[in-house]
Amino acid sequence: MKKRRIVVKIGSSSLTDTCGGLSDAMVREHAAAIASLMQAGHEVVLVSSGAVAAGFRNLGYTSRPGSTAGKQAAAAVGQGLLVQAYTEAFRSHGIVVAQLLLTRQDLMRKERFHNTGRMLEELLHRGALPIVNENDSVSVEGITFGDNDMLSALVAGLVHADFLSILTDVDGLYDGNPNSDPEAKKYAFIPEVHDGLLKQATGTGSAVGTGGMRSKVLAARTAGSLGVHVFIGTGEGAEKLIDIVEGRGNGTYIGISSLMSGKDSKRWMALCSVPAGSITVDSGAARALAGKGTSLLPVGITSVTGTFKQGEVVDVLDEQGELIGRGMVNYPAETVREIIGKPGDDAMKISGGTTPEVIHCNRWIHLKIKEAVR
Image (cartoon, rainbow, N blue to C red):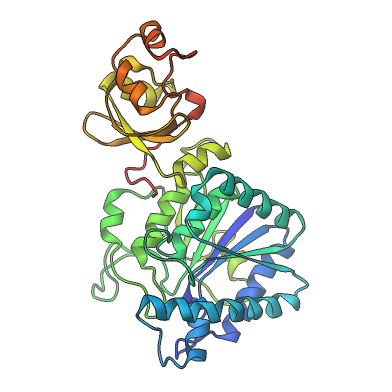
């Protein structure tokens, strides 16, 4: 079996007992399954939910709290309990675990993005198991990943994973709602996530989690755009992840070709950067950027939005306002406005710059996915 780098995402529903609290038995089963992967030579990163579920009962809640403050308080208690449970479970397999708590801000800055990636690489090199979770005790709207499904996709891109396994309590994706439509058929394999599939993927998660099937499909599309093959489904026993990796999983496999360069800087631009503005280009420039991987010259620009600085990331849009890609600009917004539509030599005279390109091809990433990750 080919040795791979694998990200395993485990949702709250796959970690809890019938009362919604953390299940030691489920933790041990997941640990045994991950240990089997590592013993087979694979490198594994675990993205695990469950902090709120692990902590709410210790604070006297009878069920998962609904308020933001309640969830944060439960997570503050539960994060330690969750990693303690994993530490004990993996110790019996001789595996050292490391905890990493992230908010979106940790990946929005390029330096932090690269530092996080280097740290994860070192842990994997040392044979440890990184356990990643959103820092629910401090995360608030605007800096959250929304759910650990998207976090798992971003982590898969960050560590250049080959495969992402999203474990849940539903056995894959269907062409209808299997709970209400007895004729609904399960997809065994989908080559890529299209808009129609996103519309089908409705519904909420379980009472102990935050993600639903739509969030998993969005995560699969993000991971797939990086060439990471994805599994969404369920499994039982210590060999469930081996079965999934070898194609025998009870769920849906999703695999598309890579759309992005393997360079970390381009992955950061595509996935985690926050665009400081946008540049709209004409149809000729749009075709060139999409098909030929050329640089963006002033002559193809039609308008500029925002007050971005030199070196910041901007979205590039076509005439219909659709996202084409992202890039790091060589000039600030006010300079770009002055050289809109100008040939290269004229633009350089006006700007006083040393290069005619507004965005060089080496600092450009073409995005075929319509929904950029924010």
